[in-house]
Image (cartoon, rainbow, N blue to C red; front, top):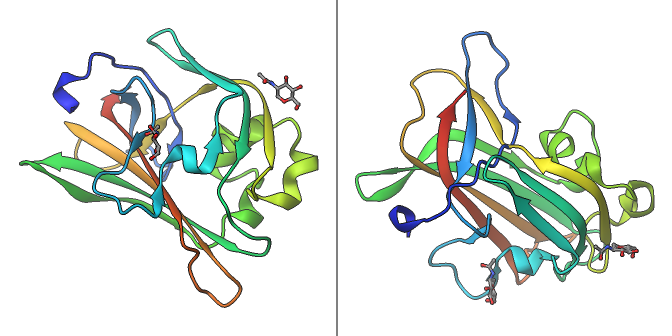
Length: 200
Ligand SMILES: *[C@@H]1O[C@H](CO)[C@@H](O)[C@H](O)[C@H]1NC(C)=O
Ligand SMILES: *[C@@H]1O[C@H](CO)[C@@H](O)[C@H](O)[C@H]1NC(C)=O
């Protein structure tokens, strides 16, 4: 579990929620060899990162300062053309024995039209590096879609105002697919990153 983690990878992801001079800058230091972990206590229809991507053509290499990603991700989640893909992320803090919500959350009603929008944070830190974007743009994350990436450093930077972010945190990502009637597909995706915020 957390305290037994042998590896502290300095994974930097840039999440710019606020851009104000009083904001404190952090990097998120990942405490896990595998980068992504399963969401706890999830029902069997909630899949992990492997339910979203086939990662067999990709590598994450770390030098303990940064994580370099290279290769391809192939979408394997069984969604249908025209589905609306709802995306959320939530930052939770470990406090007195349990995970507590924080004010740092994001809800995206439909990620597909925004996947390659330059001002989105996932573009700056991920989809920007997809070299075949023109070929896959219309497919969003339909099964079989292969994202071919130029190698990039995974960077998780964060700016926040207020009290310093101390202690153990996790970032939980969820994806849900809804058909044109708004009915949720049978499976959804949930995965997490565990770590700490280090002040820069
Ligand atoms: C994802 O779930 C599969 C099947 O339940 C499991 O074999 C695999 O280890 C999990 N992968 C991760 C990264 O947690
Ligand atoms: C990624 O996909 C391309 C096109 O299919 C292929 O040529 C290349 O070898 C793949 N890369 C890896 C690391 O498998």
